[in-house]
Image (cartoon, rainbow, N blue to C red; front, side, top):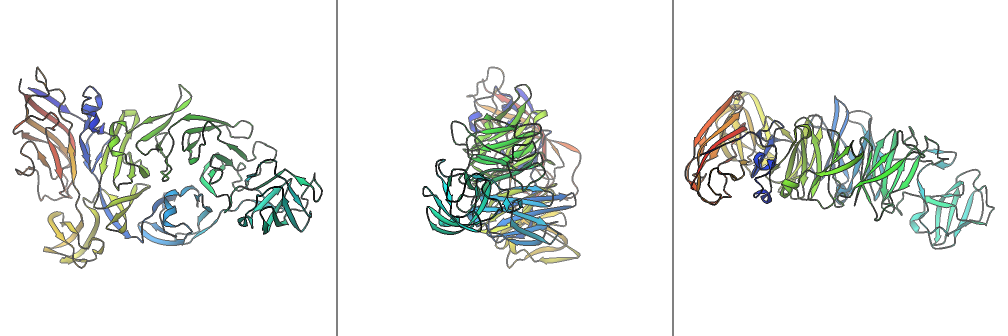
Length: 635
């Protein structure tokens, strides 16, 4: 006889590669399947929150949260050339944008007060500002201008020995280059020549353009028609590309990379976010440098944490300086993991660590500073559950549930319950009727963008819903027919009427009809939760894993549970599973803990077969705290 008590699931769903590692603590605390359940930091599992329907969208896109204060929070839905803005789950504004559907996965953003900056390497940096709940504007980010000078980043893309000469030092001038450096797209671009600036107005040839002199005293060291090597062009343009990533750090605007300068960083003047004048290198002046190493490190993301963190295609970097100044800034490479290039997956702060996805899309890392080593480490948080990580395309962290939501390219979501101080790191998988495309956390709410049969919906995780795409109807007078279910047309939906589950019904013409009148209904798509333990590794005594064994008794300790289905031997198809509280009132949850005792049936000869399995699509509360099993094996 062997008695085991499974007190928690704090290792999450483990990969099949772990089936031979019963010596690890993770095996004891893990599971074979944890589907559509949230893993609590305390160790138990709960049927995940259902999805409540908010709105039908125009197409695929991405979610961006915008928090001005605790009472003014907005959700942006970025779609093909448009942004829909929601407040309190109601659409309040709409903005036209330049980004096409294909550009959306590469958008990167940062917020300061009531301004949101959105970057894409093929478009000018955009600024979205709010003047009221319903009044929003979008425009190009402009750099500081004074006395004809525009204080933006400049760079010499041509070889260092290429010279320019001017036909005149005032008004309109013809600029001649010693090599082919100009393109038709250079019209409208500024050049910084010596200590002055000109604006190109006409393209003549690859070596010659016309320009307007924008500064009063342009050259101090060269006369007209003489050549100079001291010239640069503006770093961001249609010809050279635009900023890839942006963030705010130590009262500076930080720009990371562009299409043609992928490994370069620019920092604005302190407390002057639009001013990138390098000046004389004074403490408050702007900063510019490149990430130089044995490979080109294209910047993929910036994160303002304990230090400025730079995530590139092949490594992670730390930028230090207290405060950051041109003289004391230090740049150090920390780890060599890399970030994905197929989409922007925003890094998330979790208890002082930055969680990010690796370049190859098969793991999630924890970028954490070690006081002992005075350096960052990038621990793999998904090594034991690698089968759940499949090219992440979006992620966000819900600090209310302590859950990291990671959207995969296959349309599933994997959630990580991360609680470092308690050594909790547990993954579970979530699926819906359709595909998850994006996720975003706004205050205490988790929003999801979902695609179902080429239709797109904005939905929200709701602990009071037990189905997906849920619509809630309420009337003072009971009624039989409920309409307005167009988002569920043609679907078999689960219906809860006056807190009682009344089964499945197909939605036709946006309507359902009940067998009896009800005042309140929940209508949505059913989903199944699954909890299955790992196979027993140690059968006790002289019993080998290859011998036959059987479950004698199992005790399931549940909390706030109205319905439970368990297979302890006969299987769901061959016998009716154990049922607890079918058709009970869902809103009157049983707060007390209950122990459900079941007797096992049948001998098992497959050592990889679990002793029991919980699986149910019944829309009701379910929380499992622990499982005690008594097992016997043949010697």
